[in-house]
Image 1 (cartoon, rainbow, N blue to C red):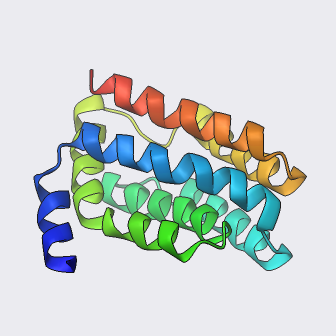
Image 2 (cartoon, one colour):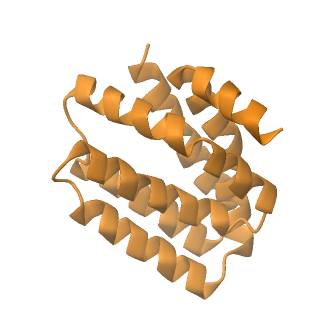
Length: 146
């Protein structure tokens, strides 16, 4: 099954990958707001700071962004969501790099602030708002691809 999964993910277009991320990350944000531990919240904040610091290359930024989103998914305490999320790493990484190169910008202040608000909502235990903001973020990314 894992080999088949890898083939499916490699063949998927970036829009399909983003749609799957919406399915996983929106629910993960809601669950993380309910289940996160203080240590996981600290890990999210460290990943957020690292995401801000790593903007010199597209590749560096995409990798730091991926770590941030994984920290949120981990805090959902659902190993199936984490495994599904991890399955997208190779395809999503390359697709995101290509998309950001085409778009011509990445890691701006508004984008960083949006990610900080997700952490704040998770910290506040507001799963509904964290999920909504995660969905809005990913839907905007999907719309960029048109």
